[in-house]
Amino acid sequence: MSIETPVKNPSIPAESASAVSAPFDTAEFDANVMGTYGRFPIALVRGQGCRVWDTQGREYLDFVAGIATCTLGHAHQALIETVKGQIERLHHVSNLYYIPVQGELAKWIVNHSCADRVFFCNSGAEANEAAIKLARKYAHTVQEIEKPLILTAKASFHGRTLATITATGQPKYQQNFEPLMPGFHYVAYNDIQAIEHAIEELDEGNQRVGAIMLEPLQGEGGVRPGELEYFLRLRKICDQTGILLILDEVQVGMGRTGKYWGYEHLGIEPDIFTSAKGLAGGIPIGAMMSKQFCDVLQAGEHASTFGGNPFACAAALTVTKVLEQENILQNVQQRGEQLRTKLRAIALKYPNLVAQVRGWGLINGMELKAEIELTSLDIVKAAMKQGLLLVPAGPKVIRFVPPLIVSASEIDRAAQIVEEVMAALAG
Image (cartoon, rainbow, N blue to C red):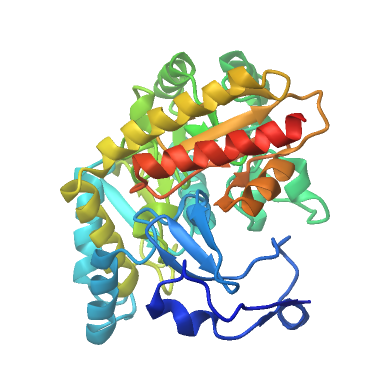
C-alpha cells in the first residue's frame, strides 16, 4: 500500500513542503522493518508545538506526545538551539571520562528530588533494570538475603527486557518469552493487605522480600493513580522491615503529573526511583536515582555506553530549564483540570459508554464501560480520523498525554473531537 501525497495542502507551512513531496510506501517499510508494532496507517513527517503533519499534509492534534515523551512538544526553539549547538561541540564521549553536562543534569535532579545519586542510561527499561540490579546487590550485601524477591503490582508495566517484562505484572507481555527471570512476585495494586500478606508468606528460609517496585500511577495498566493511604502505609512497612521502596516514574516523572515527580502526590519518598520518556523531551535518555544509603554499586558493576552522553544530557538540561522558566508545572495543573472537567462532562452525557475519568496533571484516562463491545482502540481510530491522536492504556481505557505546553484552546478542541466521536458511536 502507498500513502499518496496531495499536490498542495494549505494547512502545511511552506517550510515543511519538502517533507511531504513524495508518497510513502508502507509495503516497502513493512518489508524491511520488523513487525513489532501494530502501526496506524499514517506516516508522520513534521511537528510543531502540539501538532504533527503526515505525508498527506493532514494536520493532527497530538495527545500522544511519543507516549508521554515530548515534554515541550515538537520543534521547541530552546531544544532546537541546544541540540544544534551540542552536536557542533561534542555529542558523545565515554563515561571513562568526566562529562560536565552530565554532572549538571545530575545536580538538577538531586536538587529537585529526594535523590542523592543518579545513574544515566538510555531508556525506561534500562533505568528499571539498573534499579533491579541495585536492589539485588543491596539485598545480598546489606540485607543478607540469599535469594531476594521483588514485589511488583498486577497490571503494572516496567519495560520489555527479560527482567522488566518479568517485573511487569501482565501475562500478555510475558507470553512466549519463558523462562522468565526468577525473583519476582505479584500483588494487587493499591491493596496494602496484599503487600503485608506477601511479605509474611514469602519470608521463609533463604528467600525474603528485598524490595517493592511500583508505579505511583499505573500508566499502561489503565491510568490508575496510587492511593495516598496505601503509599503512606507502604512507606511505613518498608521503614520497619528494611525493604527498599522503588518507584517507576518513567511515564509520570518530569512534570507530567503537575509536580516534578509522581511520588510528591503520595506524601512519601522512595529509596530508588527511575525516569526516562519526558526527561529529555524526546531525545533518548533514562535515569535511575537512589538515596545514598542504598547506593552500593561500584565501578565495573553496571554501565551504559551511551548513558549520560553530552548530547542527551544537554537536551534534558534544557527541558529542566524550560520547565522552570516558563512555569510549565502550573500549565500542567490547569490544563489537566480543564481536560478532566471536560471529559467528565462527556462521561455524564454518555453514561452508557463511559465508566470513569481519572488521572493526574496531563496523564489522564477515560475508561469505557466493561460490558459494552466498544474498545479503547475503536475510540483512538475514530478520533484519528477527526484529527486527534490518542493512545490506548489497555482494552478499555483511552489515554490522554499531550505535551506539557498544551494550550487551553487545544484542550477544548481535543474534548470537542472526543465528544463528536462519542456522539457518533452512541448512535
